[in-house]
Image (cartoon, rainbow, N blue to C red; front, side):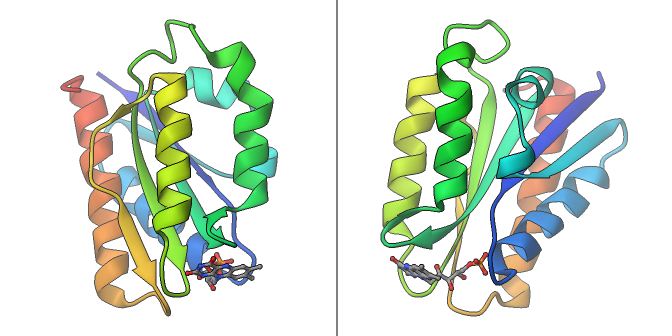
Length: 154
Ligand SMILES: Cc1cc2nc3c(=O)[nH]c(=O)nc-3n(C[C@H](O)[C@H](O)[C@H](O)COP(=O)(O)O)c2cc1C
C-alpha cells in the first residue's frame, strides 16, 4: 500500500522547521511513501483529506501553539469533521519550546481529539536549542508513522 504523509509546521527562527524537515526525511526514506511538507499557512483542507497520516509541528508561543497552526485548524475543522477521510487519521506532534512545550502540546492534542484523529506515537518535544538527539527522534517518528500508515496497521 502506498501512502502520503502530510507535515504541517510553523516556524519563525527555524527550530520547528528543522524538526519538521528531519521528520520529512524519515518518512521519505520509506519506500512507497510520499511526503508533503507544508507551512501551516499554505496547507489546506484538501491536503488533510488526501493524506494517510499527519504530523503537526509547532513552536510553543505564549503557552500555546503558533497562531498559524491554530489558523490551519480554524480553516479546516468545520469541513473536515465527520468526513470518512478524517476519522481515525493517524497523527503525531512535534513541539519546539524555549523551556516548556506542555501548553502547545495539550491544546494541539485536544483539537486533534475534536477532529477524531488517532494519536499513534508519543510526541517529540525539544526544549531550548534543538539537539542532534532530538532530530534523530524526529526522523524516527517520521519513519515510524510512514511505515505504519503504508502498512495500514493503525
Ligand atoms: C512570541 C514567543 C513566545 C514564546 N513563548 C514561549 C512559551 O510560552 N514557552 C516556551 O517554552 N517557549 C516560548 N518561546 C520560545 C520558543 O518556543 C522557542 O524559541 C522555539 O524554539 C521557537 O521555535 P521556532 O524557531 O520554530 O520559531 C516563545 C518564543 C516567542 C518568539
